[in-house]
Image 1 (tube, rainbow, N blue to C red):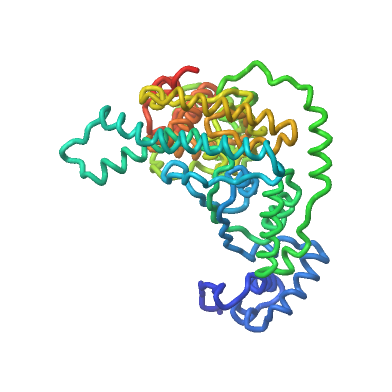
Image 2: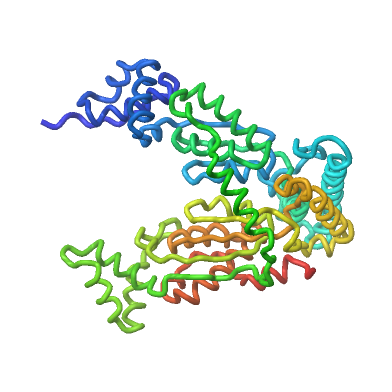
Length: 473
């Protein structure tokens, strides 16, 4: 007779993360219910298990059952890039769109030491934050003239919109040194590797955060993060490859979206894989040959059958992952901070520098703030150059959100559906909307049938967004 089905929580209030991990691991060899297994365990017995199986025999997947919730406060947005550079975790951070930064909310890198360079950095941060703070009320007044409050709109709703739009445009001034809070939910296996990367960082702040995370993690899962340490291979590779790239030119292309490579038969592979999934006897090659033998109209009809009935929040079938695309993107740092959250893709971001110029929101220009804005940007670039002679990694702290950077990424069509739905939405920031719509145009060119079903709530093209929201520099 089949036992009674039970579904329940092993509460972290009663059990340590390590004990929960062992409880799940032991079910492969024990017929007992989970709660009985857990009742027989102590923290010491759990630690012994992990020493033997996770450390001794390399069964690291056991550590994925130990989940930690970490609160990190007052870390720089530059450090957050490394913190959030791990795919298997969840992050929520302070938003530069919905919160206003205080005057002194920035990190001063230890690499600067004492003296003129440190003072120049602090003075430039104050310049950026002063310009940010002073521009917000100017933009609010301009926005009120541009769109007066209507009779049906409450004061609170109208003022909230005005403040949001002003902060949205002024966030371009915030430097990478700006301090923020970030909440992290991560399993012990991923945390160990995250700590390893942090301890191997060229930035002292990130190494310090890694050390603090290791101590916090050892309190909760002492065995599972016991061996987290810096990785000499990562450090040596960074040093060696930096020498190779020193003489490489910046490159002439500054176009926002460059589609480098894609699967030329991606649409056919996706549909063939779906037929394969629901078929009983045919192999994939037979499915692919069938799809490739269809006329354009027949293929479009089959795709229509596939996509019909799909709701607003229904993900495309997993087989959409069989079509891969690689992009070389240029976007401002503010847009990148939203782009990096899409971790199902593979991303490689270059260091944050002033070399690719900066964006100027049209609202900044039309509100009369462009002169101060541009002066602050140019001062940041000047101080970057000064710091870069000492340490090019620490120099990135002074670069504001407005400056552009390059990002190489490879993603599949399923991930792009998700990216496009979120980042083309009308409430998305105009910087990332421009990139999303630009990429969508490329995707629709190479995958005209399945690309036509992309979730793009906004009607504006990337050119419309650029003309509406950005001044020409």
